[in-house]
Image (cartoon, rainbow, N blue to C red; front, top):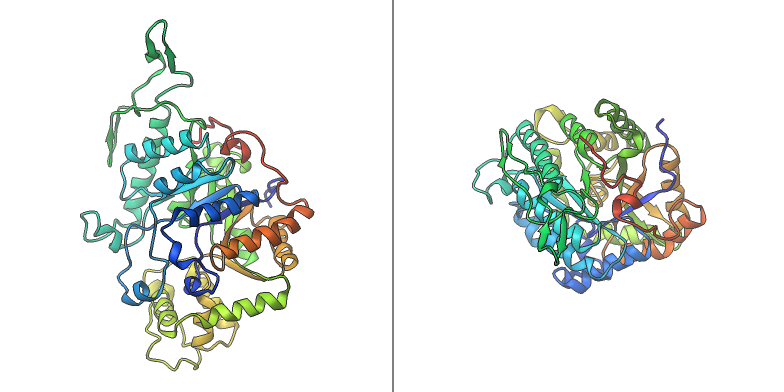
Length: 441
């Protein structure tokens, strides 16, 4: 087992993954495009001394009329603009923006993230995604998405170009000496002159080196290509285990790859997602869970589950047993996610209704429903067992679900000495224990 961090890191998702989160009585569903809504979320996370505020993003609306009509998760605010505004109302929390390497250009992404790093005094982070579907492709002049191999080849070159652009200007190059009339010391400038398979970028950036030198880099890929990208270039990796055993295996798989790139285990932070329903007691949390389950419309739950499994469940009795699932190799689905679903179906005798209610909470995280003590026990177990350096908290609904975690669970974690009691000084890199100009290639 790889030695874990000295303290547990915390990241906050801006939204819930639950299919019916927007129907929760306390959800601010009519405020999803209002700045005050996001201010309330990020300021709650900063009160809870979170390390990161994470803005996910998709560049499309999925072509499912049911999903568009009955869920709110397709709505997505552009991350850089949002986080730039939120940088003005926060002081310490990291600001993680999702930008796709498939449908952006490196100069544009590097410049936007460097700007965010300057505006926030060194708190910017970049969640690298390669996008996943044809719906996004059709918004950018393509009929189909890149193949898995193509998009990761492009992503690796994209990140290398961005890193090179961030290093074009040395520290202190912008002297702004009014007496001599010298604004920029050109001896501290090196153009990029990149010519590769996917990109040709001369450089340099038209703004100076940012406070972190390089924004913190985040990735979430669990394929072999995704793990290579994370191990060679990322500072944080988001993982999606659904059991402790899966968590330990994924943690060790990522950490074991670092030596090949001359890196140490502490240079890559592993943060699984965790979907939480918080109650003051276990009984209250269970009641909240049941309430949320009843808010999932059957047709929406069936549509989501059928899409993920690759079979049409709508023709089967809703309160009948789950059918045998197809072999994962017969269609293009996530191996890790489908394996977990298959194992759950085999372990528990659930009806189709019970299964979609369970599945509606999160496809991308393990789940905990309970009191602050119950939740802290599980997070501590994962942390101490070597499954995580920290966690990405996915609330049951927003903003109340995140506020419940901050007000009820964070004090319990602090009492146990697991999370920080105050923010340290310095940039996001420094707060995470990463070198400010660490060369990660």
